[in-house]
Length: 156
Image (cartoon, rainbow, N blue to C red):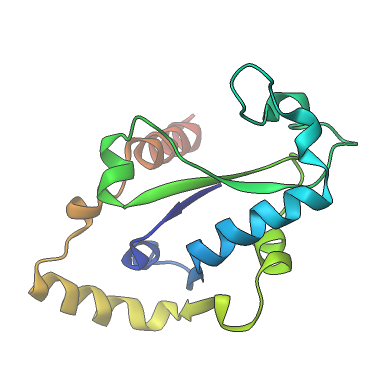
């Protein structure tokens, strides 16, 4: 799942409420390492490089439901603009927010809702401050492509 450290991103979808999920990344990383002991992830450690080989457990139905933050070594423009990062989980059908919620407690995680009725006023104020969709690389090429595909389906 992709995350970004730029909470304004959720404002740019006008037709629905925005949700800003947040979590304490330092607490998350600490508790991820603790949870890996519970799942005995050490058995997947590669003796040559000392790294845990997630390929041996990832995306298997019977694998442990671990989650971790992915440190992507080659950031791309959109990722940099949105100050983004990724989480990956051991099972494909895993809800990342639930796993994060299971690891963290109280003030370590939460969610803010931005009602769609408030978005236009917020966007107006952001424009005055010089914060524009282009500065967040929104919409990205994936969203533009999806929209074009939808328009073509409608015409045909």
